[in-house]
Length: 313
Image 1: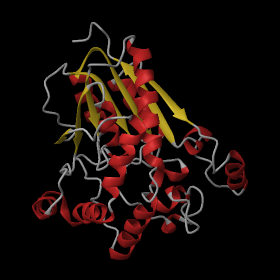
Image 2: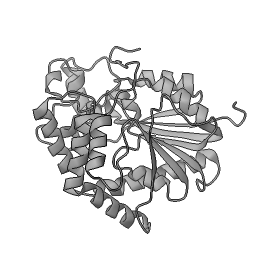
Image 3: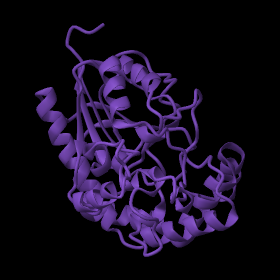
């Protein structure tokens, strides 16, 4: 494993990272700013629709009336709602699903099961009306008559309770960078995919500029840290990682997928946005980031597509 890898042996909750009260309040404020617009709902719906078309191409059949598992549904659950439009979809997450009617009892349950940070974030979303705006935007974007009743279960991808060959599709986006032992999760997911079924995953690459998950980068804040600060010892102290990250590098992912899903297509996705190759060149001329390839620095995400062989056991 490469020098930036630091995966632990047990599953880690998304919010189980100590930031301190000031940084956590800043993070909550940044999240509020991020969710002020519903443009991200439009983007997510488009992403899922495009992904389903890719899955259809790989599987060779329409993605309709299928059994789909989404890994990491999160609190928004927009992706799961989209996947449920024409299919039977189940979502799993290491943190408790948020009920449609969030009340005092639900808040107490979240406090007990997932801790103060998750409960506070959920309460803030409820007070600010974020979930209500998200669901309204979803209905407008998809033409669905209403927000669907979703099947979301608290479960670790590294220890699934589903029977073997239960799903036609396993879908995940922006989750695998948070899984402490991706190899174990992939072994389990491979088990529950039916022969001929498809695994489709997009995850954030740690070595990209935004791979540290500093919310200020996502918000394009003027106070954001310098480019690739989390990989540069002199400015690492300026970074505020707001969640657990396994810190795997691109070569680690290539190896893991080759071992667990032989033949999987692993594709770094360069978006051509800031930072650019010119920004990278300027830093390299100063002697920095020479241990990293262009692909792992300039690719915010990695897409993985795999079809389980028809004769697989």
